[in-house]
Image (cartoon, rainbow, N blue to C red; front, side, top):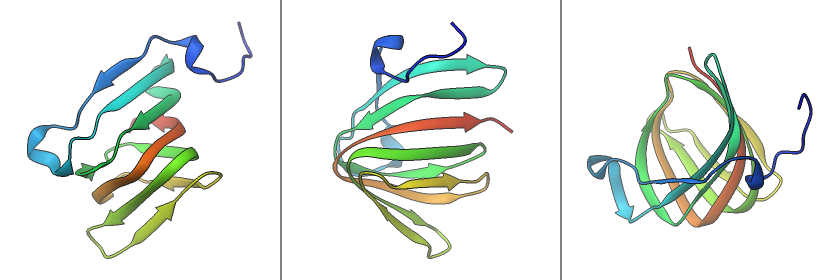
Length: 113
């Protein structure tokens, strides 16, 4: 199919956790429905239970939040609070933390560099 709505029914869910050494608070559990995987381009739906962990991006990512509340804080002092309807881009080289305050669900598009 060349066009379709982005829904979890398009992919099998994958469950994961951040590496233990990256977790700063809680026990975040991630569920990912990766709908597209094509030559370094990924697209799907991701959700996480509350917790906080370190992040480091080599890739470019676009996100739109559908549910929940999270805070993305950069090691450079930047801070972005996001909730339903918010969209944002994380660029390669970003390092910091992702904190899920309320279970969060997002759509994403990732381009590997």
